[in-house]
Image (cartoon, rainbow, N blue to C red; front, side, top):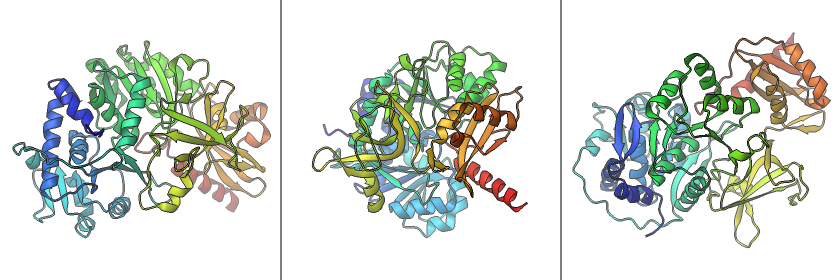
Amino acid sequence: MTPLLQNFLTRNSQIYPDKIAVSMAKNTYTFKDLDVLSDKLANYLQSIQVQRGDRVVILLGNTIDTVISFWGILKAGAVVIPVGIELKSEKIKYILNDSGAVALITNHEIVSQNKVMLESSQLHKVILSGSKEIPSEQLYTNMDTILSQKKQEVIPVETISIDLSAIIYTSGSTGEPKGVMLTHQNMIAATNSLNGYLGYTKDDKVLCALPLSFDYGLYQMIMCVSTGATLLLEKEFTWPIFLLKTIREQQATILPAVPTMVMMLHEQNKKSQLDLSSIRAVTNTGAALTETNIAMVKALFPNVSIFSMYGLTECKRCTYLPPADIDKKPNSVGIAIPNTELWLVDDDNNKIEEPNQIGQLVIRGATVMRGYWNKPEKTAEKLKEGNFPGEKVLYTGDYCSLDEDGYLYFKGRMDHMVKSRGIKVSPKEVEDYISAIPEINAVLVTGVPDEDYGEALFAFVVLTDGQVTTEEAIITLCKRDLENYKVPEYIRIIKSMPKTPNGKFNVIKLKDMALEEVKTKAAV
């Protein structure tokens, strides 16, 4: 059998037909349900002439129809493009046009906000989920109608493993979004590697409140389908008390989290005091866990193994820190994931052999993307000649170091490094120091223009509930313990960090706030 991503579902629908695959909002769906319903969607897509390699966009958020659509699109031989519902019209329009998508699966609200744009696009069909009434135009159809049809056989498609399975668009915070092209081979390799060290099993219940449009959330669904585990799907992470209650009531065993989620759950459970002992593993990527975050996880979940991980969409995952090392090397993001190699290069592209030197991280392995859709120049910046003729390796654009034991430490993105007083400074290094101050709950450091230094460091700080300190006191500590060029010129205590829909700190918004404050000061 050709190794295709959808084979995970086909296989486990036969092994565990009546086992719950997805539980959401008190509704449950078995592996057989997912297989049958995705077959119906695949059959419909084929009936409207969706061809092998055509792109289909899913713009639905965390719903069961998103899960069904993902597998149905693959079965039809098409390419999945998962998109976050938080995107504004201009970004949606850009992705539809750039990808050349032939179909869109979305909801009534998105259509009502973008009707003119959608009807002037190249789309052949817009499939509406969760809506009984659809516009009269021929462009639209109803998902419920499709899924209520009698099941028919899906026409075999000659897809092979190096065909594209998905295009995942990056956020585009510093420019137009880039579509990361992933093959079936890429995504299967990533899934197998993740399963290899995380050890998901058919007995696990994975609680996912992360967006399925975000690859960290998407792979929770894929890994559950691949192992026979149950996905406890949450629409969003807004009220931590509901997530805590779901853990207790459903006896969830695995929680994929980002630091902001950890902090909110910890604060809530100090009041609620719920028994969360069913959680056996907490995974993290997207933003590094601080030592404070790690202590919070241990306080929340007494039996937990903590997997601190690091990656980027262009290769899914780079490294993981084995749980046994979380106390010994809490600031490390660990070792290469199975079936992956990594090394560092200097600015002249020479491999760095000495430990504790900062260089750009390079990744070699089967998870490395095919490239950026329609962007050969951007692709050439990231994919360069590897160790052997004809192979490409990924230049991540991230500064890292490796210690004497070969453990990786993330230092910052090349485009986020701050050059203060002529010296490159990693904002993360300063964040790590400030976050260890007892009164501090969260911190983000960015750079702002400065006449004297070229750039100056600007730190936003959130205090732990009930704690008191001052901006001056924080700067005093920084001056005591950090080199001069690492001391923030500005410290601002704020009530809470603005966040992106993926739960990360909104770096762009905070940078804008910093620039505005500096500009206002200069004008006085």
